[in-house]
Image (cartoon, rainbow, N blue to C red; front, side, top):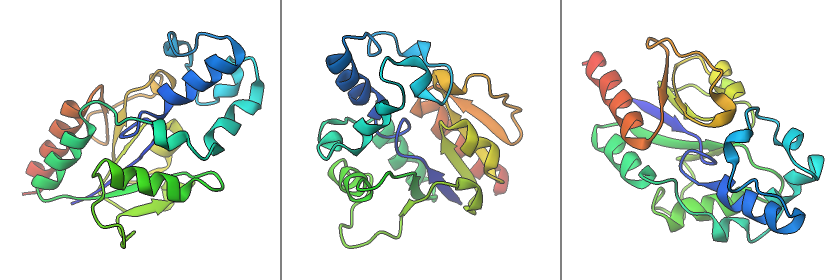
Length: 186
């Protein structure tokens, strides 16, 4: 089974570092109140408007990003039930290599010479796989296979139906959903 996994907000806790940098520069408290971001368009909730996205191109950003709790163990568990995991992520200019190196640093990927399990892509609707694990509502809606919505304040309005779309509030739940999907195929 092919599991396609998003990076930011799913295995990489990008938002914690991103919000911290914004708070420092704008004297805001986004880090302590991230649940106020109930829409994908973050710029609607911050003092700097669309300049918030400039933080994503800072060359040292991924040097400070930590993994989402349980992500490394979750990916390993999914691989241990005979699934291939491919990381698919949208990259702003200049961030493709930073994300790839981050995945290597935290052992989500293990071969620095191979990018066969890493894809930089904006439209995940064109990907073909069995399962997508993602936090972006637009990706969840576009993907044709089964989807595990990795819970975030900006995707809580998405409906799950327990046939094609499931919600996971942590990596243990995500692994359980994948294990159930694998068992149903056997």
